[in-house]
Image 1 (spheres, rainbow over the protein chains, first blue to last red):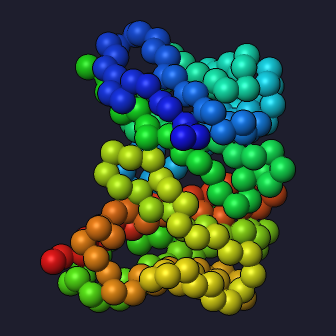
Image 2 (image 1 turned 90 degrees about the vertical axis):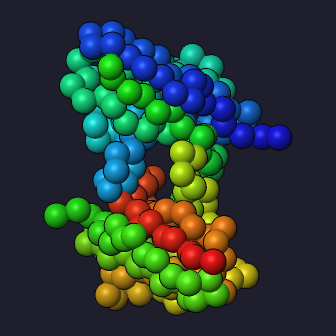
Length: 115
Length: 109
């Protein structure tokens, strides 16, 4: 079945550590996205990538980094510079032809907790 | 002020009732409107999308858009306990997707 796989499901990070969240899709989608979800605030865009080897900052990119070396993969690194990283992180993808106007496909998310 | 406003709820209804959800928005450039359903600890899934003002029906779900009032609604008829989830509205301007904060719905048996 086609879809998006995020791992791990739960992740714990110590203060000062960098952690990397994995996102893999087999939908042959060109565009991929990372969102952060906090209670009552909806989804906020961190980074997005329309094609391989290219990505742009979203609304809240500070303290995060990404790479897009393969079409299928779009890992997100939460760096120690991110002051409040505890949140639910969602990866999504869309076909390039519609630019997501008909909606995105989401993964099941990674819950990151700073301990 | 947020571009998209959505009442966080929770909205509690008895099984079989009609669930009424809505969002207001401020950006007149929004063209496509979507509703997502999100179960606890899961990613959102697309329920419906619409482009023009008016109604769109899909089974028990009806999406309504009023561009003149910058107001969209989702109605769920004959609600079931399995409809208990958070419902997020979303809308696009160009290729940027903006989400509302979500409304938590609880359908009680």
